[in-house]
Amino acid sequence: MESDLHTVSLMNMLIKYADDTDLLVPSASDVGLAEEFNHVKHWADENRMVINILKTKEIVFRRPNPRRCINPVPISEVQQVTSAKLLGITLCDTLRFDAHIGNVLKMCSQRIYLLKLLRDQGLPRYHLSTVFDALVLSRIRHAISAWSGFLSAELKSQVDSFLKRAFKYGFCSILYSIEAIAEDADIDLLCNMKNINHCAHSLLPPVKFCTHYLRLKGHKY
Image 1: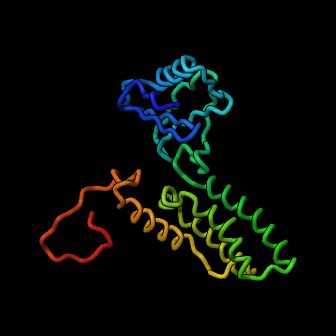
Image 2: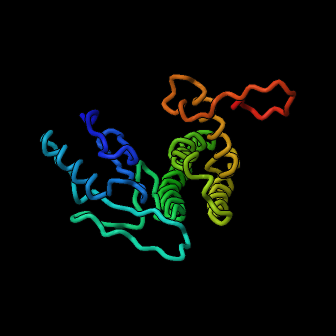
Image 3: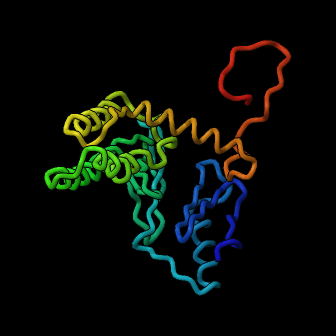
């Protein structure tokens, strides 16, 4: 239904996923955010669709410690926020992931309580580990290749401490670490991207041809 919705300027970008639409406008764009948003609203009116203004948020990404930071005037009717959730990932205006890790660990702790109830009712450790992978580890792995590289040592330590406690109390049979989980996810992503039919295949750099004998690095790009 949104296939004919495009940005006014080629410098701006629309990202669509099901009924979720995100508009990216860089500060150096020749068409501002307000004009682009009005274009989206006009398209919605012509197609008899309703934009949920209450769920529409505006976030301004900036450097963590700018010498001078002036936020643009918010769009009318739209709340300007410092963090917003996009497809299960909490993005902050400084591109730090403290809030995301906090939300993930909070959700995982709630699911650990469920595992504790199952353990107390006699569920064997093998099956507990299966439930842990399905309910807890899957939440940590969600889109991890997109945010793991931004984690500070402190945030990694928080996740590792949680995983150590889960192993100590017998909820999982393997002692996981955030570094190992992220590395496995990156390897899987690269393997999938090599497929020419993958949606992210075009993001790979060109194949590098070299006549010299070089150290192997796991890929040819």
